[in-house]
Length: 323
Image (cartoon, rainbow, N blue to C red; front, side, top):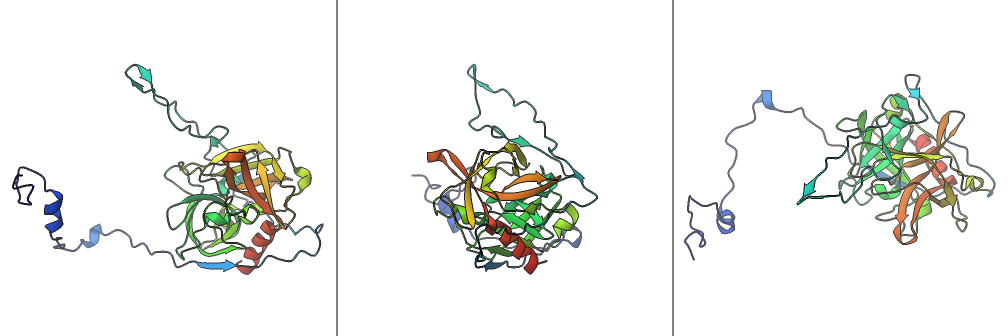
């Protein structure tokens, strides 16, 4: 055994773990010059949580009034977003054999887009919780973001960060939520908790983002629409800094779900990060969200969304209590 192995320094060799363990930290010897100091960034305020009771529905056939949509006059309206063209992937060979990627990106059936000037595609939101987990959402009011309940870090009061239309290194705006509102706190996978039909939340931000970028309306889903390809969605796969769109998909309400919160399957693809993405259709040129993406169920090969009258009631409550 050499002297170096015993913890004695040999300047020809790097320090071993025992030597590093014995070393004392060195304190700074000067302060940062004023000219080199970065701008001061204030951390977000602790976020409040409001878990509210579901409204009592007087009759099953009474439709909850929809929450209105808004397109500012300085935004155009596009019924299909401007796609991002990706360059062909570099061909890589090893010992004469071409290597294939393990993951296709974007996933099949999805398209990257970048359309900051056009409504409603500019209203997409990328949500990062206190633990760095990425989810999706959409502006649903002047300072309101609709997302999935399980995209919210309910176990901490650290605010979520919301990026509006993040595309590459840039976003139109960013903000933090000051209040998170839901009927049910859902931690982890909503499918495993049997709470698919209650998997939605509204985040109230510290900035009035909707006044500038607009917001989508919200309305109750009707089972008479089952199987019809009316629905578009937009959101962020967790591996992407660009939003993706999926157009012309169907929803199918669960026949055994008879409450005011409804679970429904969809033909749209759901990968990690898509949770909270809006499923929306168009009425008279305006987009209205009827559900949010919730979970996939690989054993059954099904993708699930959450909607129903409770979704609309939650948005109406958030907009009324926190205008």
